[in-house]
Length: 224
Length: 224
DNA sequence: GTCTATACCCAGATAGAC
DNA sequence: GTCTATCTGGGTATAGAC
Image (tube, rainbow over all chains, first blue to last red):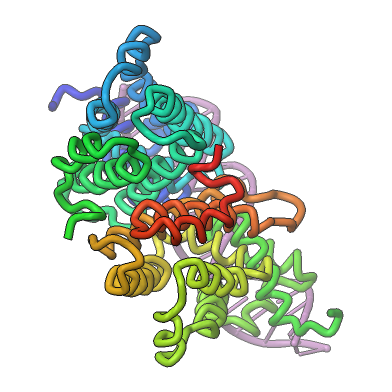
């Protein structure tokens, strides 16, 4: 840990400060102070302040893409049950955000999305439309396999994923912890899972399927 | 229109600029330039820059509270159908946000919520928990009247309203128009209404109720 | 690679003339 | 009520010594 290079230190301190206060509210002086170097030394490692932000963002994208599924995976996934699928999806996301670093960057993205065109484009394409299309395929598939009722799969996907975005917004923007680093991702994934089960049950064809999902209802909509 | 006082001009220009670029990205110099006065004149009308933000925020709260329902209204509302209730709720919100000024301030709130404690408190209490409690009462009522299945009314309310927050976020943060002022609120309210109908249908007891809601399905989840 | 020193700009805010 | 003039502090960034 002590062997971290100065560049890494600048990188990590910047994630901390940017995600806490927002990019514009953090000065290069403050970053330097926190790292323990003089301000001008930052410019040896990064040519401009914005380069630090870009490198943080690149790091985030790289980590996100690690969990991309291949086409073969997709084909396999298309054969499983709604329940298994949910777990596959949520475990993938939990894995991506298992480090607090990634959650901090996610907060930074939520915070900066309104005035940074690059981040906004990424948010809309990769964090919103991408996943919605992903889930659309699966809802369509469940419809074809007559597991759920015929309908508009994209609307279902939006319904499901929109709630997920809301929970993420709640977590990283509204209720972000100030001091300690213990965020319990499981808490919001329980909520999202309940929501997923609710949707599946709502459009399920056989009661048997409902039963299958019911067993995962811990604090679900239709639990008393 | 030409008779607007300087103070009003400062107020309106500030809403424009703050909502477009964020509070910290707008200088008092820029406001003054846009209004057509010298920077120092602003300080005759407002003692600090932050006072402008506070006054915008107070304006927003005042407008929001105008549509508060009385206890008698609540009692009457408890007797109507899910469909009528949805329309009551959505019309109230549409009315509150019928001016572009209010939408701009809503964007400003979304933008500043992460680093302004006062705004965050307001967001959590009045824009999130308040409405969720409001809808919880109604879902509970529909359960008591055996219109929908027994379950956790709060979860249903969160499910419904969370999607609404997501659509608002999408509208005012992700897809906010740059130049012209034509935002079509009806578009997102159609989505939210579909989502509401989807939920009601999912937990509806009689098919008759489903039928009643179905007629409002324009682009609903279960429309092919 | 890190330092000192400094350039340059723009921010919020105030004093006092008119 | 609005102006001119100015203060003070902080921001990003660079040059050049060590």
